[in-house]
Image 1: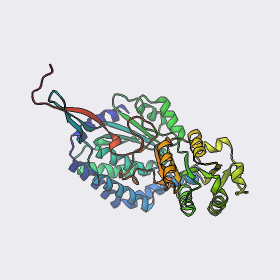
Image 2: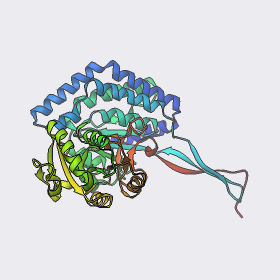
Image 3: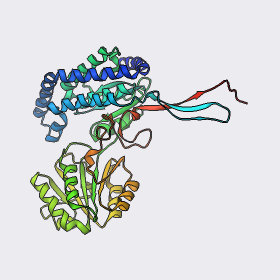
Image 4: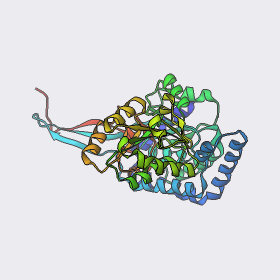
Length: 412
């Protein structure tokens, strides 16, 4: 791990000097390699999926692990989208002249070396490599053992793209071992690693939060809510709630708890209940909600704090906006929460007061990711308050330093 760190530090210096055209050539070459090797990537992913099935992993896990042709195209398109973004490195802001005559500005610069530890999503290999590269950072990638064949195949495409653009191949390195001890060692390499980004389950992130000596960008859970206000367009609310829960079950921005205002519960809950039943979604509801959903299981306090990552949803009827926000404050994970309402004042209050990294009005929680936010892709989602919050794209992978333009001034 120390050898990987040393090589990454050297590569980071080369990347910090690279101009936009060079980095974009590498990104475009990686995208071409991914498309050209589609069959190889699919074969590697099939091997990982078969091994995961034999190991008894559930459907949500297999969904996260699967690439498919659409997933491969999305990886390639994501890299091209990152190439099309403005390069943040070297950008000046807040330039002003002081009383002494000197001009002071802030310049965006790379973070340096970023380590990403992730579990079953092989697309992270391409997304992380592309974003780190564009932002001028070297990266060390440690994917899960269950996606080893897929990750290696994608990493080979990355290596080819770097070489074609004349950039050091050590700018993106995969950890070759599945040994868990390597993760702990990586999290302690303060002399080589500048930022650690864990992407995975709560157990992985909690472990790294305990062991890491390197600063982290992280979120522990995605206990996401949709609140249907009594001034909501109920047809719109049905579409949003259905999508937020059932479009994909195993993602961190999937709705886990539905909150419904008492004033519309009698009309809305039977309709959404019919949709959930048809799709095999298990409902766990409070007593007031079960009056309209008699087949729902009684919800417990623990249910409201659970990130299901499965076809299970917690449901609660609330008196109104204030109680909905109080529920989110008590049980939420500061990840993503949404309100459906036609009342602008209520929506603006929700947007202002709900303390989450993404807060949405009249839109599905599934939009809370870097690609949908126009970041090209994302390195992860941060619910921390320092440096970066929400989906972390290019700007979140840079920092700022002060630069001063003088004209011979001396301090008196």
